[in-house]
Amino acid sequence: MNRPLLSLLAGAVLLAGCNLTPHYEQPDLARPAAFEHAQGAADWPAADWWRGFSSPELEALIVRAQANNLDLATAMSRVRQADLQARIAGTALLPSLSGGLGGSRAQASDNNGGGNSTRYSASLSASYEVDVWGRNRSSVQASELDALASAFDRDTVALTVTGAVASSYFKVLELRERLRIAEENLANATRILAVVEARVRLGAGTELDLVQQRTLVEQRRAAIPSLRQQRQTAENALALLLGEAPQGFAAQLLGDSLAALTLPDPIAGGLPSELLLRRPDLRRAETGLLAANADIGAARAALFPSLSLSASGGYDAGLFASLFNSGNLAHSVSASLLQPIFDGGALRNQVRLSEERYRELADGYRLSVLIAFQEVEDALIALREGQAQRDSQARVLVNAERAFRLAEAQYRAGAADVLTVLNAQESFFSARDALLQNTSGQLQNQVQLYKVLGGGFGEEA
Image 1 (spheres, rainbow, N blue to C red):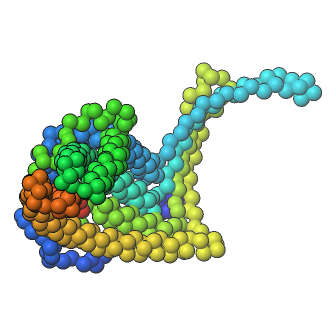
Image 2 (cartoon, one colour):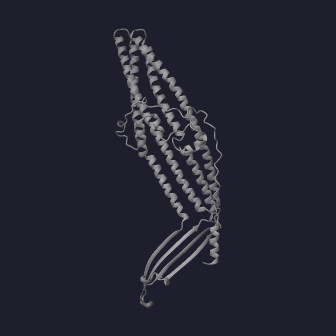
Image 3 (cartoon, rainbow, N blue to C red):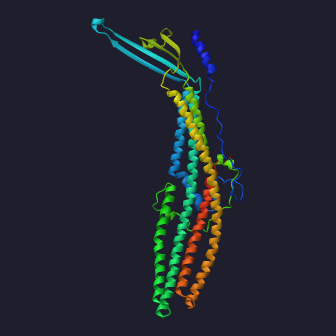
């Protein structure tokens, strides 16, 4: 190996530690000291937060969803693909080696002396690009960060799926119970209709009383098909979340009431700054920012010369038996330095593009953090106000039921008219349905709070 080549290699070794990737600094972020509307214990959701609802059936459904949900399976496949892409990118840091074995036979014409000739050859070659400016290392780092981002995407999907299963299950129970209440309301209205009919026959009631009560009965009957449709649609949606066909799925669900569920004690979350580590979507956003930072380093390195080393050796002989004799060996070693001279500004514009992409992602990251803080505050407000509404609605129901019982008794005794009974019926029926929806809403609010706090993700943080 000659002296110029040795000097070139020595210089490459000295420069191989260069890295043109900018030093990463987390963007300036709004970091409130505490959540403004927080109530309850300052803690984060547990990894198995759904157990707080005390529903073995819900727990079983979430296990099935985690195993069979197709969105989650797709996200896991993307993670595996990203890991493989990172491995492929990593091969740029390693030398490539190839070998060959060949043979040829030629026959000359009589005019050219005639005769046959046979040649055999064996070769081995190696090449390596010295990563002088860190371009390959930056590209590998970006690929590894992309793989990590895919993992955070998977965690986001997993959190979304578990939250959706819980919300859908609560919706199914709500609609099943609302349908049962509607049927009970119809039975009550029909029972009152029988009383009105008897009074009309005895001359103690009017035809108007009868028509009004019949109208109410038909209104109650008309409300049932819509609730039945909503219930069946919700059951089908839950089946899809579990990766199962809807046919026969509803029969597998045993729950039919929200009364058996426990509403967990409210939690306030920890410090807002910890939310950056507790939500996989925010971790994914920052990981994308880090990858964009690495892309800047790769783009900058492309402006500088690239150094490639290659070596080859082989044997060539007319007889295969003597192919590997030392006298038939030939080899070569070379190094090449390639410097872009004119590309119309493509490489420099690529650097500017990478830097602008980084700024875009940095602003997007800041926005994602602000939205996350907003979502937590909104969820805390919804949980607090929803509880106040539910408590008030429970008192409304107590009074409405008492008024209905009194109005019915007075009507039977002839001390009240049918209009009073109709109003009392309507208030009682509406109060029952409204309380059930308020209860379901509070369960949904609790699930939403768990989701926006990151579920159980990042418990090690």
